[in-house]
Image (cartoon, rainbow, N blue to C red; front, side):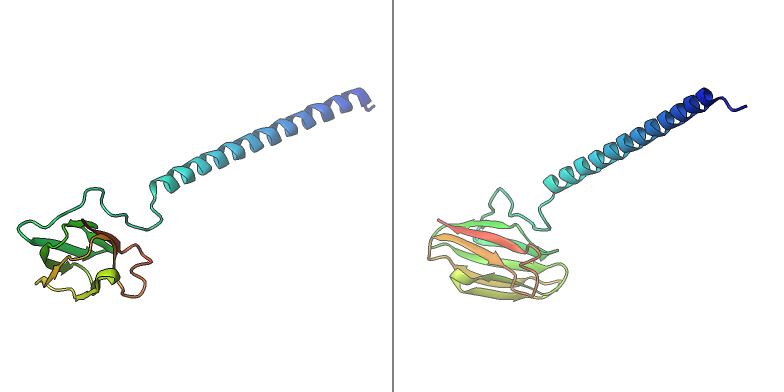
Length: 152
């Protein structure tokens, strides 16, 4: 004969085990989601969004000459500082493809092809101010090929 009390007890134990399993499954998924979210936040905080920021320390011309490398959607160095009235000889090297060294506010737009020899250009900085340096090749500015020139 069927013991109804025993059946009810078995149903309770089975349901309890299922509930515990379901609770543990939810806890595990929650922990995994929290871990992935933490990793995403760390990676986002460390990232610059694909954009290369200018270096914190500005570079200046030494003996009237400065070398600038254009590659991987960045200018190296990315922050240049000059004095008003200073004449500078630029040695521009592209390490990967055709780029430009363009500063709209100063009227500069120099094409820099990939070559073993640098492009040599000279310029006198007459107007003080902060100027955006960009590569005007399609998509390069959007990829972060931006720098800054400060004339004091």
